[in-house]
View 1: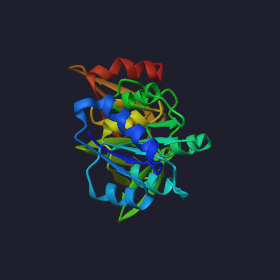
View 2: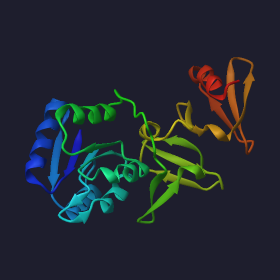
View 3: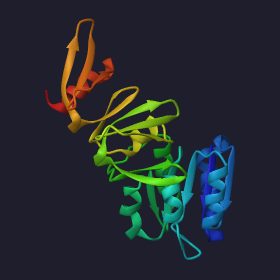
Length: 233
């Protein structure tokens, strides 16, 4: 695990570092602490990361300036902040968890377990996905997404207007963040349920789904029964 902590209060930073090391033990390969917004942005742009722990108030600077860049990255982001009123906005940008200050080891462990997929996110309120395009961050409403296709360590967003955009997060990471309105129909596809027209069953136990635009996508055999249940058919 390569972890970046962006926190301006040295006492709290030391506490986060200690708790992080206690949870991940020998799996932490590199743990870096930065105190300012500019230092955090510079580090994440030049280093591979698995996780960012981010405060939203950095010496008076708004941590959302860094958040827009972190949620477009391949790693997960956990907010650790006293500004509880910012939680909903943070989740709308696609953070994995929001840990309110003051916090204890148990609450931080819950957030870390979500990174390891041992805990589900009960209320996924993400409204947008942040995509890097031509050096800028573009916010894509999830309402505009038809489906998402895995592309190795990346994912390809297919929009309702047939535009395709590459996202730095893997399909597995996006599945953790997206609401239940998206369903993992196949190892390579996350589909918006409302865009599914019907299921097509062929000989040899082959399953496909027909989207409302008549596009055909495969259904994994292990996903077929659950998808039928979701569609109530």
